[in-house]
Image (cartoon, rainbow, N blue to C red; front, side):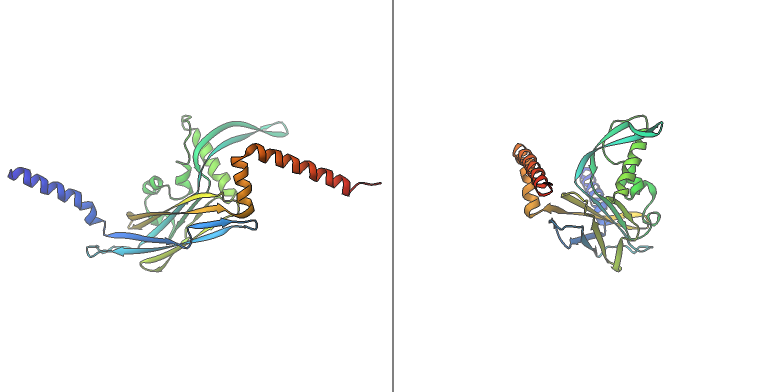
Length: 257
């Protein structure tokens, strides 16, 4: 009985040890949980506020806190094609399809990545475009050759302004309060956006919190999108009819007698 009681106490201590070690926690809030896309939409910005909550058992840290905010847009399927030169023209060559690719990605940090965490930890958490390139999407293996397509995918998304990284994108207002501005370009697609907030010190991950916001269409654009999705035949006929009418109207207006 005594051995069983000691074993139970030891097991309880092991279970509580990670909780005691996790002396910091994060409290986060967004300026808006819904961003509306209207006819004059040209991009938007969502501001994240974060506060570090410390309990009475918090140990003193040897260095300052660092924070990272990773934003991922709605997943999509993307096909990457390599262009090949044939004489004087370029043609599409080998291709690779990726599933569950974030349509938008932003990595905002309070300091350069090498001051946040070790490369292995950053890679596991997919913080930064280099780490993202090694994990983005799900695809068939090609003995390592798929990495060429992954890197091309990240490069193309970055050129489109949909994948961004800012090493000073998180600013500490006080030693325990920070903010980050999440800039959404006009091309950011509607859907749910996940926000992953991480707290570091001395290269170790101390706390983590997740939240989200939604990018939605409103007004006429939303009605057109709903019609195209739910009544595709009617939408197609209406589009064709409108094109024919506008073509006829242009011929009448610009007709020369």
